[in-house]
Amino acid sequence: MPDLSKYDLLLTELSALESQVTLLKDKYVAVSSQNKELDEEITILKKENFSLEQKLNRIENEAAKAQNTTGETEVFSSLNKAEKKDLKNKIQTMISKIDHHLSS
Image (cartoon, rainbow, N blue to C red):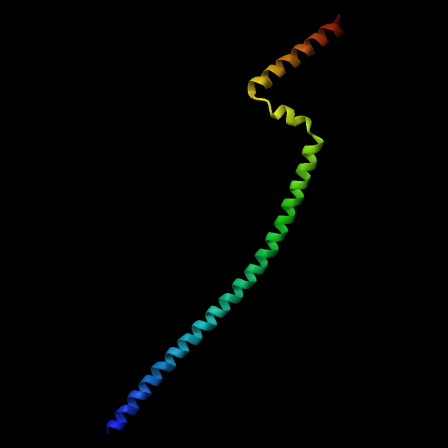
C-alpha cells in the first residue's frame, strides 16, 4: 500500500507540474505575441520618426533660406521697444518733411 500512495503523490505532482507548464506556455505565447506587436509598432514609429526628421530638416532649411533673404529684418528685431518707437518717430518725421516739400 505505501507504494500506491507514493504513486498517487507522484501523479499529483506530475499533474501540478503539467498545469504549471501549460500556464507558462500560455504566458510565453502571450508575451511572444505582444513582443511581435511591439516590434511592428517600433518599426512603424521609426519610419514615422525618420519622416518627421526629414520634414524638420526641410523646414529648417527653408527657414534658413528665408532668414538669409530677409537679413534686414534682423536689424529691426534686435531693437528694443524704445529704439523701435524712436525709429518709427524719425521715419514719420521724414515722411512729413517729404510730404511738405512735395506739396510746396
